[in-house]
Every structure is written in C-alpha cells, then in structure tokens.
Image 1 (cartoon, rainbow, N blue to C red):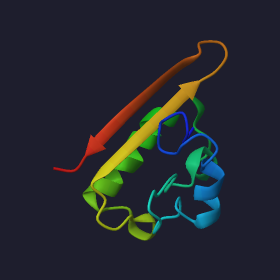
Image 2: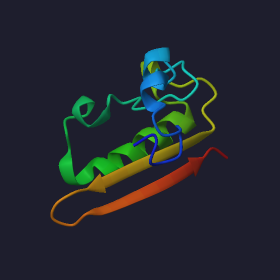
Image 3: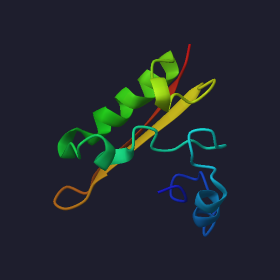
Image 4: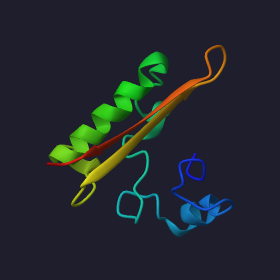
Length: 94
C-alpha cells in the first residue's frame, strides 16, 4: 500500500524495503507493532489497533518499538469482501 498512499513512487516500494527504509530506525518506519500478525490478527479491530500504535509512538511510550522523535503517523486499514471499505487517519504530536 506504500505506492497507493503516495509514500513511494510506482515500482519503488521494493527498493525501500531492500534499503531498510521501513525499519524502526529507517527513513519511513512502518508496521512498528509487527503489523496484523504481530498483534494477533485482530480482524475487525485492525484500524483501531493501528491508531493505538501511532498514539503510543507519538507519546513516546512504545519501548523497544519506539521510533526516535516520532512527530507524525499514518494509519491505513481496508476491508475487502464483502464491504470493500477503507480508511486513512493521520496523527500529529502536539
């Protein structure tokens, strides 16, 4: 979803992964909680779980997962069949 969200140009997401940009200390830290599988695959609550992780990061309470100087976070969640719904939320510290 990096490309669909405009965080990477089409075809460049693979390069970001290979360069380590998505790691905790990378230029674009991603899935700092471990993603859906890292938090027990909470199905219908994945959106709120992602928002909770961002708030935890922005408050500086993420412990080993903490992104240094976190200022902004983006949560994206979508549900395929049957609803095809999705949402994006952007949070900023302060």
